[in-house]
Image (cartoon, rainbow, N blue to C red; front, top):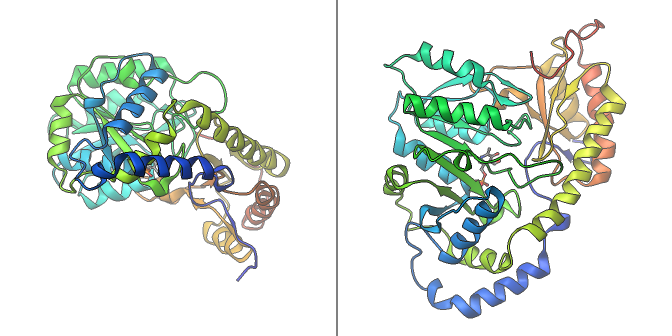
Length: 383
Ligand SMILES: Cc1ncc(COP(=O)(O)O)c(C=O)c1O
């Protein structure tokens, strides 16, 4: 067993910047004020204060009104992923998604017996230019029950869909009467440039379901996320819910923490994440520029790395484990589990010193796991 573990495997937030004292004050305040609510059940939508805070978050980011009565708090956005799929599909039904997507979603869809149909991804997210062909190929019989899209800082690739592609996605879905589930849980883990609009800000299409989370801007241990949708979809989603609602205590504390809005704290936390992302990207640039390609995302928690086909994936896994460097293999994010020459580096919780030390170790593992000395056969992250 290696003495020191450097963990690039798991997508987490940064414990070094967790706002301990502010959370302590918020918790004391919330308990004193809301102990009566704590003795009751939260109901299907959940804590009104946090719903109002999240409606404000969405509305301030997107510049459109957001009704807190159409937001339902969930046990992380993962519960949203699952509830939506349960409400809209039956075993054997088809869902279209990016070919590389979030491992938790893949697991949930698989266990619900969903037939996942993948659309290729490039630096700008789902290849919407290939979506119509995919839908034509599926035909009426296998028409998808919805399209699941990670539009901003996609997990695992870090890709962000530009606004024109977003418009086209909504236009295609609406014209064909297919709901879209937009999972935006990284949207506010933002480092550079403009934030692209969420799909609901681009269209009145009532078939858009929007998922978001507190996990990525604050802490996944809170298990707070939310679904925002219009009644024709929100009602059946809520009808699937049999958990008596989401945790009032966590919601009350976070609502108090964000009493003046989410942005100040979020920007503070993002500044440290940007440093980490740059350390990863610079480290890869120093070590692997002749051999690999990688993303340089403007937000999110991951860098997606492509390496040559001649890397022996099992040998790479063994070498990295022996040397204490953990990463997430590309196969985890492929909708069919296909072994692909990619890996994902999560940096949110990794101390800066570990990033500096870990990337050169990983780079040596990649080089040693090669089975030839041939020059790499690609210039970009995607074919
Ligand atoms: C794309 C995506 N959606 C949803 C989730 C679930 O997060 P949570 O349930 O903590 O909000 C994650 C977590 O990594 C994710 O990457």
